Image (cartoon, rainbow, N blue to C red; front, side, top):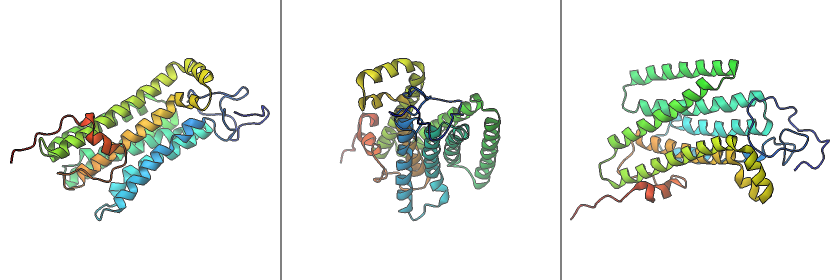
Length: 286
């Protein structure tokens, strides 16, 4: 907690329109833990995106046929972590725009890759132009107007389409009843569940903010940090996004789909073997 009430926030007055349910110091809108971070936990939890992005980039560097295109989603995931951290640490309008835009710059390349997995080079190029032009138009409109409806609709639509096309690609590129299909389904189901959990935690964080603050005051630090639900949104969506990126790369890259890659970060290997994977395929009798 800020001990000196005369100590002003390092980043100056808050200019962002968005704000989240962290603790507030007496004479400041935020900056409960330190004058250098407006929302401490919301800033700190963005490291999840960055860690998974670095892990994904490291694994791709070990593959001989991994060009720049395959690394774009991982760079996008890293950008989300950096831009979101900049926003939550400062709560400035321009960093809020960076945070919002980085989400679209991450989902759009993944969307393009999944919907053009079986397309010709011409269709791939045309879809790239269409998606790129749409993204540019939405970014310009969002920055100029600071409206969230179109931005949110594009993001949710992209995520939903990615999920639908991923399910189709699993059925096309893995053998029915195979162990690989079962394990990939386990990872995808888990990723979808944890991503949606993060979304609901984000909503609840805004709906019952006063109750959450009362609970945090009751339990005290450090356990109060566990009730910072927007921070859990970062953790859940970071895990879910990484798993989808890794699974889509595996399915689209032309690798041997009879086996899942063994280098995925936790919890992907656990999800591949857990209840999310369903019952094991029946083995053929010798």
